Image 1 (cartoon, rainbow, N blue to C red):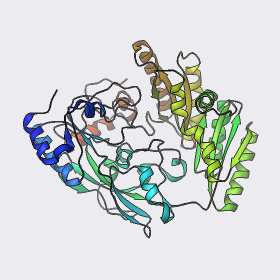
Image 2: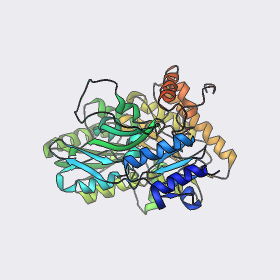
Image 3: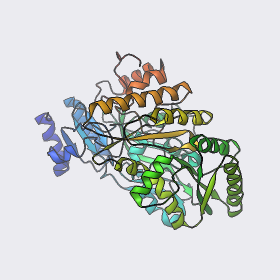
Image 4: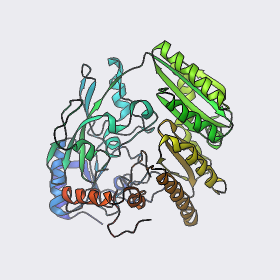
Length: 463
């Protein structure tokens, strides 16, 4: 497929060499991260301003051509692929940090700024932005997928940390969803309507974010457990007791084994919790002592505490490489990461259920997750050329989702819906899914904004 010649000419006049129909650019924006098939767009545009995005959207609407926003390309559910072709808007050149306001503890950035770039810029202010999804994602993409990460148990997700957005609508109109006040009762909450909409309602071009002071003291640790239940119950009990870890992560024994092989580590190959506490030195010491007592009562042992930044980073490196290490166990494999999230009390049962499903799984698989907020992943190392294997893993994923939904959980805690989780939307939302369709029809009546994502076809039966 190709873009209409008239539209291609308009975009070339508007953007110059920042518009391309070249094969390599198109293939680089095909949404091939993880297990989904490549679906390249017909062309790629690289805007550098909100006004350019608006002009592009007006032209595409007139030509009835789909538009798909693209950031760092790290999404895992085909969120930025182009199943219907169209124009990919690569937002990475919109990378200005517009304003940092230390006195208000907030900032405004363009959508293409990455979280690492923002924190590097903030280094001398004593502030930082805490949402860390693992990949060095763009903040626009993180807002569009309502991303989360290891710090969510303490600082929250993108949902809690975005103050306002600048959005270009499907008609090419530029709007601001809110002011920078920390709370407001004025009108509908448009900010949270666009957060997590994955570019299906409009294109996010600027984000105003909450910032936080860097903690006075930090202590990290890992400890091992005899089984997954002991580890997950410890995580739940720690939160229920009122402990406030900044991060609390779980890796199963198989995952630790994969990390040891991948990174030449020699960690004990057992179900493991990674935890980090922040605050005043005295407060951190108190929390550390309470956590160690709780974990020990549940069979926790082999505690390794780290205070200095370099030592903490060494401890956490296992968690940060867990996905890659799991996939690397099988040459030529692609990763498939599940993403259920459940109420805390249901976490041990859901992890046990996943363990049971994996007992006869023929492919390398690991369990890892942000257990402090009930979110965990099973990562499969899948042969991309084996349809039978793909079908089997899809069935396992469906069973994990069904178990999560039975506990009032969700099919996706942080990766978004994209094309991968559409089939579960009806079971999760019921009649509310029709309200979402009405919102989509009102804001994007021609279905040009990232079509084929998030909402399943209206006629699709519930699974």
